[in-house]
Amino acid sequence: MRLFFDTSALVKFFHEEDGSENVTELMTSPDNEIWVSELAKIEFLSALLRRFRNKEITEEKLDEAISGFNETIVSFNVEPLGQAIIREAESLMRKAGKRQGIRTLDALHIGTFTLISGDDWVFVAADKTLCGIIQSIGLKAINPISPD
Image (cartoon, rainbow, N blue to C red; front, side, top):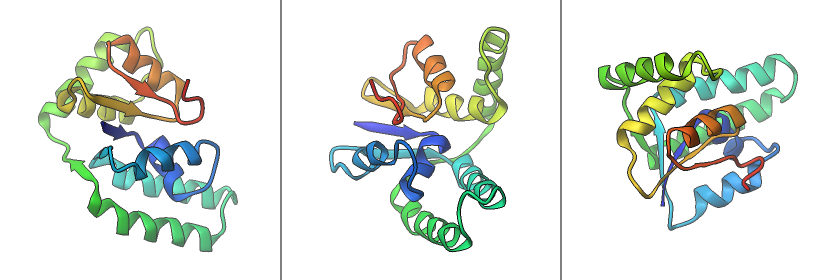
């Protein structure tokens, strides 16, 4: 199965929190191919630094997570951002933005996913709104916090 990870789920592989066990199972299964947006690199760092500033993690845990991410990302398929993804995200925002709380970076992740995905692809996000948007456009999603 091809899995596209939003940063909200991706961070759970490198920092123990609710949903980490499910993310680890998905990411370590030899049957799964892992995909992320190039955007995940900076968004991941931002998420961890926010946790550090909020004193949710220690500097040691921050350094461990960043180091682990840098070592692991080389094994992921990283889809670069480009004009097509930006246009897709803008189109999604115009279609869904009035009804659903879609944020800019989320639209870029979803835009990336919709452009590269096929029948055997699944969007993985630890965000009910994001998973709902993916499902509302007819695609598959998994929320590792509540995978059912």
